[in-house]
Length: 232
Image 1 (cartoon, one colour):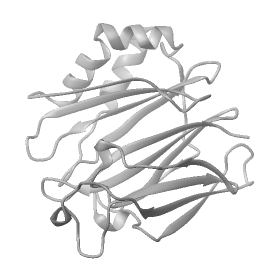
Image 2 (cartoon, rainbow, N blue to C red; image 1 turned 180 degrees about the vertical axis):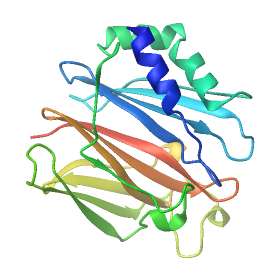
Image 3 (tube, one colour; image 1 turned 90 degrees about the vertical axis):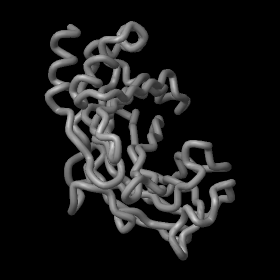
C-alpha cells in the first residue's frame, strides 16, 4: 500500500514564493473517520530548502495524535519522500488506519490570486468572514464563520504591521462554536491575520484548514492551522 500512497503525494508537491505558504497536498481520513491526516509540502522562502510536514488528528477530541516536520537542502518532493518513508510516520499511519486512508475531496478550497502569501489574504482583529460550504448535500450550504480577535502575546510590536495586533480566532459552523483560542500557542505568537483555506468532511467528522499570517522572510508566512472536529 505504501507504493500506492507515497508517489501520488510526491508528484503533488509544489512550491510557495515570497513568504512561506506550503501547500496542503493531501488530506485523508481513516475508514472510521476517527483519524485524519494533513500532509504539507513545498519550498521554504529564503533558504530554498524543501520542507514537508505530517499532522494526524483525533476527530473525536480535536487532539493532535502525531506531528512531524522536516526540511533539508533538497527538493520538496525528496524531503517529502524522506518524511513519509521514515519509520515513525509509517508506524503512525498504520496504527491510525491511514495506509493509505480515504483521500478527501475538499468541500471547499480557497483559490488565491497569487502564488505567494499576502497580508490581504487574511482578516485581522475585530473582523469576521462567513463562507457558505456544502458539507453534505449538494446545494444546501452551511455557514462557516471565522472571527478574529486580539489576544496578547510576547511578540515584539515591530513584528506587526501598523494597525495589526497579535490575534486568535474563533470558528463556528451553523452557529455552533467548534473552536476558540484562549491563549496564543508559541507557534502563533506573532499571528495577526487568519483565513479559511479548506474544508474536508467524512460523515460527521471534519478537518478545517486555516492559515495564520505572521512575519516572514520577504513577506508574510501563511502557516497552516488545523481544527479537527465531530460535527453535530
